[in-house]
Each structure stands twice: as C-alpha cells, then as structure tokens.
Amino acid sequence: MRTTISTKGQIVLPAELRAADGIQAGEEFEVDRLGPDEYRLTRLTPPPNRGLVEWLRSCPEDGWFVEIESESTDSL
Image (cartoon, rainbow, N blue to C red):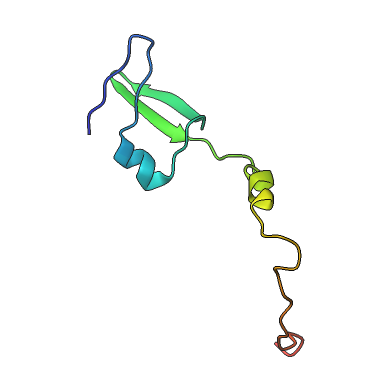
C-alpha cells in the first residue's frame, strides 16, 4: 500500500489500515529508523484507563443491571 508525505512531513495511514486496527485520531506512534530508506512505525499502547470515563457515562440508567444468581465457585 502506498501513501504520500505532506508538505508538513505528515504521513497518512490509508483508511482500510486504520479501520482494520481501530486506529483513532490522536493516537501516538513511535517511528524508528532501521536503516537507509527503511523505517518502522509502532503503535503505542494507550494508558489502561483511556476511554473509561466515556464508557462509564454510556452506561444505562440506575436499576438497569439486575443481579443474577449463579452457582458457587468454591467447589472448583
């Protein structure tokens, strides 16, 4: 797959690659120079709680979750 560097030095990842890996705007990558004309782009792992607040805010209203009974795991 080919892409072009902009006049600002930016490289655009093609949409199908971004969709396949769930890459969102603002994510960080590390660029390593492996040798002449060869580079490696590595996606940095987001912090473990990234998106947690948004996820909690999307939870349904109080009382939506209902406790269900299950067997004890003590015998396992």
